[in-house]
Image (cartoon, rainbow, N blue to C red):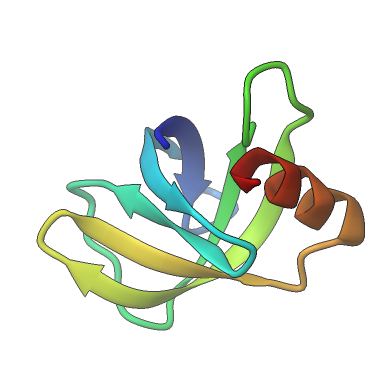
Length: 89
């Protein structure tokens, strides 16, 4: 699985667009060169599959690796969770 994800760390941040290479009900892995601190909060937007509605969610950085960040969804709404479940099924 690979899809574009827009992410930003603050409201004033214009945001970056990178690829997510893993998606689950609990979170996603964003391949990025941008550095983030563990436990940082991100806002992400992505379409979990072609022609799907955009998921807009907050995430907490769980792990930082040399190739990106593993982020856990925070308070994902039921409709967004269903979109993700249907994309990974």
